[in-house]
Image (tube, rainbow, N blue to C red; front, side, top):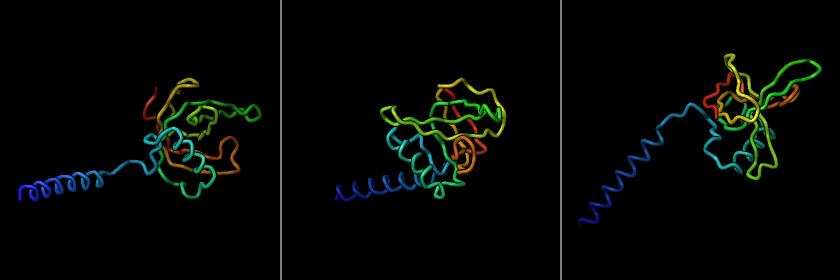
Length: 138
């Protein structure tokens, strides 16, 4: 009898915990910061290869900030660069911040959140995070 009662108590405690965890609301729909480096690189590649599944979703990602300038138009762009597990391949997603701030130098690790967009005819990276905010630097 004690085993049955213990089982029921554990069942309700575990069930209650999982129920409360599943009810937590996240401010992002795709959180790349929780994935391994191999999975992040794969997911970002998928975001570029099949963008229609991601457009309009809120994405959080961690990577290295990279600034680049178009010599012809003199326009500056900023991207979050994600490396694969071996750091031999990379994917970048350009971002546009909601407000102008002083950005860290190239190579600084950042965590950024924004709304995913993809425009294949845009110069630079066709994948972008619009209305982005930098959540963490370093």
